[in-house]
Image 1 (cartoon, rainbow, N blue to C red):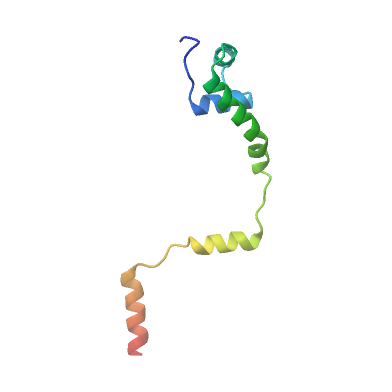
Image 2: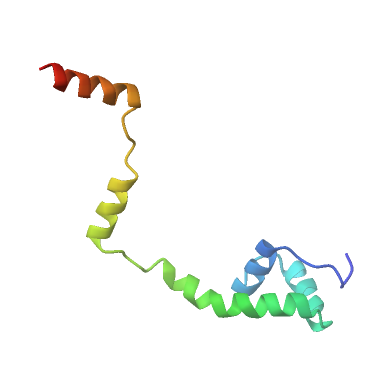
Length: 92
C-alpha cells in the first residue's frame, strides 16, 4: 500500500467514527496528512454528518406516522383473489 492510495466509503466512515484497525487508521491519517484533497474533503463531509447520524437512533417517529407507513406497505392480495371477491359480491 502506498500513501497515495484512496480508501473506500466504509473505511472512511469507520475512520471518522474512530473504529477499525489501528494500523489502517494510521495509514489513513498519513494519507490525509500527505495532502489528498479528495479524501480530505470527503472526511470533512463525514465529520459534519457524523453527529447527525449519531442522534438518528434516538429518533422515535409519531405512532400515527408508523401506522400509516405500515398500512401503505401491507402485502396486497393477488389480483386473482381480489377478482374472485368482487365476483362473489356481484353475484350475491
